[in-house]
Image (cartoon, rainbow, N blue to C red; front, top):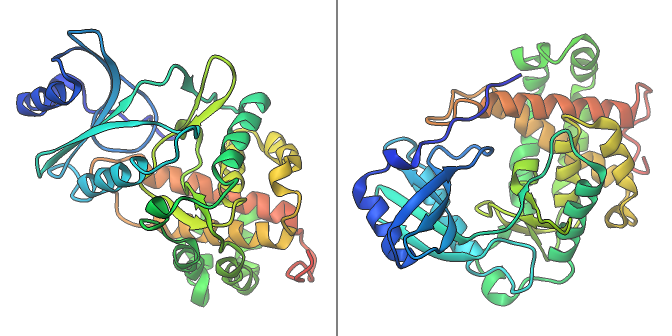
Length: 327
């Protein structure tokens, strides 16, 4: 099991950054409590100011990870445009000092979803995603969203040529799954290649469904947080990725949750095509060098790929005809 990600403590932020965050919030920060979960390399704290205001603040420093500041800037652009009344975080504002970027959000009363997943909390998260995808995004949000089909095409291409199926990462999947992947390399590539054509759509897609990106309120409803990767696509994509994450700790629960209304009209082959594409992308990414400031990311990507491939093996079986379009 991978080690938990360690965040930068609030008191290690430069005084200038802390001062500017206080100015954004209207009063100096007098207390901060670091928050667990996630992979961003900076700080992430629930803070309280001298005048009693509470907020969630996260920071990124280009000196730790060159891309982190741009990721935070992207999240600010998307979050500022998310619809009123949606189960999402609310942006207070941004501090941008060039090599330091901080985002401040309204505090949400709640906690991270439990792992292993609880069925009620998983259903609440699926309901939140259903709410978010119930209608096309407004034009000012849609204007900043890319096409999910293009992104998925990149992930799906990881299987091309068969090299990934023969990689060291595949060998580490365990005898059963590793053998299945190595003997099904062409089938996996063909299945994944269908994914771009089935994930297209006009709905908001979060593209980062994990337990640490779901907050559960005291009333049991869910809030979806962390929006830098948002795209435009099919409404069932986020729910499926959330179940893929649930497979890491709760395989039977993930299988049962496929009965959620979100999936009622989605052909099984479309679900499997996306699972194959994401598994390939995750497995290929796990082979890349460590990401600066995020030492646990590659291990997570491998674990997620292993869970996806195990699930896909169960769903597709071992027979010769599992790539049939109606399966």
